[in-house]
Image (cartoon, rainbow, N blue to C red; front, top):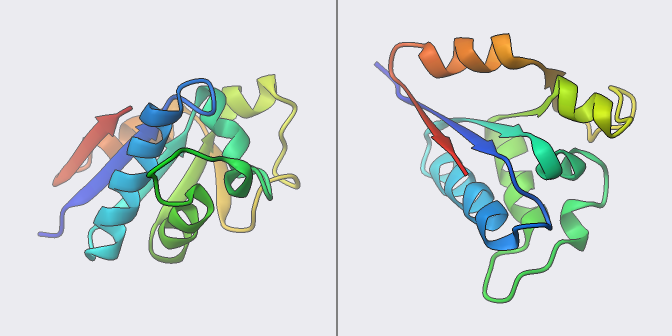
Length: 120
């Protein structure tokens, strides 16, 4: 049975180290062939928009835009429905490949047999 890693990023530029850790773990797992689902919630929801990940900087961290690209190429990226709505982000605003979905979908993914969920 294949394992799935579900990573929920709850921080953005407001907590850069925590944010970078979530993206780094998700991208590392994706590059290793693990099925990955990255959830953007709270302030990390902004990274669903074009150019936002590329503007993120943290010394000694891989560029967030590159990490996001790896995850989008091999896995799935979801922006939280309520978080997106609070920021006036709609489906036409997000990077191609990013979907907007809610808690029920997160719970379904996290509870799937063989799934491991991490929250940063």
